[in-house]
Image 1 (cartoon, rainbow, N blue to C red):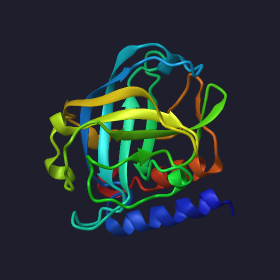
Image 2: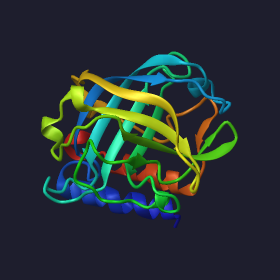
Image 3: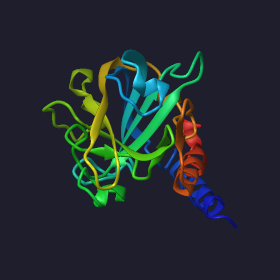
Image 4: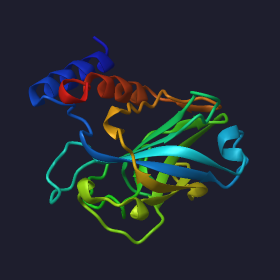
Length: 217
């Protein structure tokens, strides 16, 4: 049996026991704007300066109590990024911006002051690069339930495992999304020269899909 199939079966069973998805069930979703600053990555979405409508979700990966560190999640969807109805999703998890350690999940408590990374590289215009979202404000918050749109601001960056981060966009929440629980993010909602290029992303995709049972289905 493939690793993706085993992962899917485990997550589906756990979600059924819990009565809702086991992954990132505890979160809050916002309307947002993503402003690209221009680059030379060979990716149309990032190369041209523009402001895009977006949706952003901050969540606690295992849904642990706010006092405990958790694998926090930041999901970003750029709406119609590659044409009408063709969105771009980026799924990021708390990690570190330190060289060498950028592939490791680092449990955190603070949703607004933590660095989020893709953990595994994306293929961006033919290059293998990690994607990161780094805090662009001075807010601190450990509870997803009381997050305010005005405090949700990040710099979107790309970089290699060892090299410096390069800022390519800013992310700013504009309001609370009225139906955020219904949105399904996926690393394979992508296009325009952006591709999740490793088998780990396949595990991630099947695990997210398998967790959608119970109240979140």
